[in-house]
Length: 246
Image 1 (cartoon, rainbow, N blue to C red):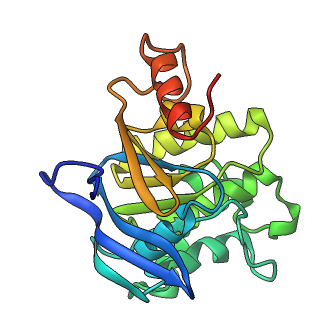
Image 2: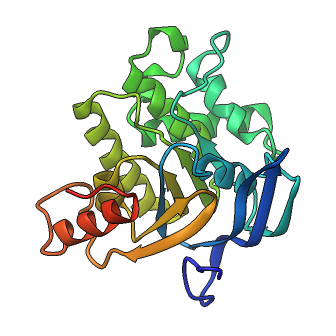
């Protein structure tokens, strides 16, 4: 049985329909259907090896040897746990690289990179080398590079997992500020159940390549304020689906 992650109504930033993918004899994705609406944040959680990053790669267009349908509005933007900045390019040029699929001139690309850096609070770091940045600053640059082309879909693969706890909270708040301003759809791959509940409108649980559960978060704690009355219930429900019984 296929579990759809959302009723098929409204406008979608991205959608997978009955997607299967194999690595040799290993069935990595098994009849996966998943939808991210315009302006919606969807969190994808699951144990290591459940297929989360593969779902993200398929949506990003980085993996095309699958069956089923992939529908994405425009070119999605992608940010990883590691910022993956080019060390031989300054921060401004790293961000402008996010415009490589557009017809922007060099002058326009530099100007848009400056705006994107201002959005993430790093306008004063445009001319520095990545090696001089802290971990949180590097991740901010990565977000600026992803968003400079104004995508309708932002794909995040454990973007805050390598950061310390305080920086992680700051980055969550920044992501939400950018989301409120630009209203792109977000697919957030995370191992952190609390992060999923705090940020997402909907949490999808993946297990052995299959969507096994979907939770609608009626009152997400954006970014991570006082727990809502349903927070602990949501947490218990998701942990149960992951096989963690407290």
